[in-house]
Length: 115
Length: 110
Image 1 (spheres, rainbow over the protein chains, first blue to last red):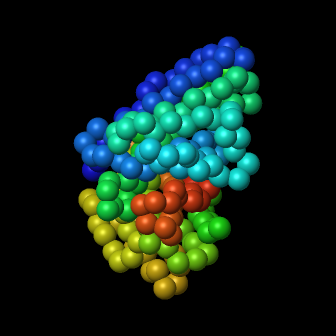
Image 2 (tube, rainbow over the protein chains, first blue to last red; image 1 turned 120 degrees about the horizontal axis):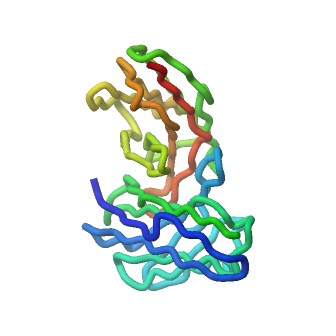
């Protein structure tokens, strides 16, 4: 299967600061990547679709000014949680699909704790 | 959007038992995947199975697309099979994200 790498695996930050999470496709180029959020003991919810070279598209209810997405290259998408608050504490996980493929491959996830 | 329902929500079995997990979805899909989420949160791809039947060791899966359901079979369960199993579907090819079910929390007791 394809390899998608996410960094960092976990991060603790102070309320009001910003945190950047990276998602890389290691063995293929991904024009589209996806970001999900998972609260404890809940399912994964799609937050946004990251498109290389264009603006991300956000799901309803996701604040685009709080969750900044940049997909500057075919192998890297970043999610920046701006002015983080304790309610942003969650597990964030990215996925990518091979060109002309349909199967999604996921990164390891990032556990964010805002104190 | 597509609705995904998984059953049962929780399942406790003894080691060596067999289990069947079900995933119902509300509309036509061109992607259906089964995942196992390990204790560290990582999603392990089990099957990509928008239709048909596949087997991988003790695990197998069947999707009946016309009836909008998929089944994941685990035979001779081991304690390492414990965890949450998610079914996720998509209808837009690789350009759309996945809709996840709420998962089945499986506990295999020694």
